[in-house]
Length: 154
Image (cartoon, rainbow, N blue to C red; front, side, top):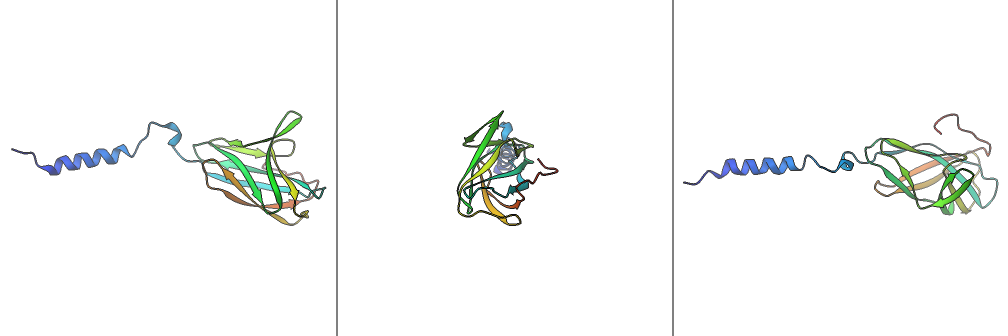
């Protein structure tokens, strides 16, 4: 005599559903959840180059990496890492899980090179941040005075 197919199919379906609920990979817990705050650009003092600063927050359980930046303002936007007194262009900067990447004066920052025009205080510069895992983020960066110093966020 054959066993009824109904209970066997239900058991198999339940096992398949439960298999999709968990993972042994700890990095798959929660994706990176990125947002940007405290973005600004000091009004450039030259016609060809400007710096940009911001904070990328990651409220997710997975790290990500800022890999490139584009802007209509400049032909090139590069990511720079500062160590001690030296600065160098890098291919990316890590955004830690449940942490933040801070780009600030005297530290890691963005360089807008070969400016198409010199932005003035009060204007806004649009840029696109590209990441290894997350979707790109478009940021409207206000241009502040050349001597602007943020009071918080950096």
